[in-house]
Image (tube, rainbow, N blue to C red; front, side, top):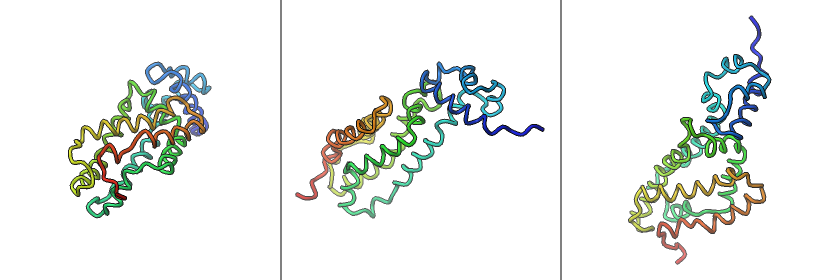
Length: 207
């Protein structure tokens, strides 16, 4: 029995990444992916059952990573102090820098998800991510509102809209291929643009 050639898979993935990024999932050609990788279509199908399976192989690790980060943020907000609740809604340069570095490390995969995934099971990735985030952040907001720290009339639907705007702002630099310098400026502008305390009616704890 011939040994399984482990050098083929990286070639396929590299070629597929280029093709999907250039043309999107729908218009990407498996034939061209194979030609660029220097492999046969048979070799590809031995490793991936379909074009969508190949797309999944390029994005699943990034999805798993961001899901793990979101899950790690879950806490019992009833045990959190008022000051900590306030701080949880504070955008800092360090916080955004961390997120941008996280996404830059997975830039191609996230670009596929937010820009090139139409026609796949991932085409609603950003919406689904916002849903996951909002399930957690709305619990945080409700505890703050119940304690009289923030306004009391924000619905989960409204927070979903605001969170969608935030994540769109976060992903746009990847969609438009910002340089590191442009991302740093974007980070500073985002802090000025999005004020969660003001939007949710938090009382200034220093007042």
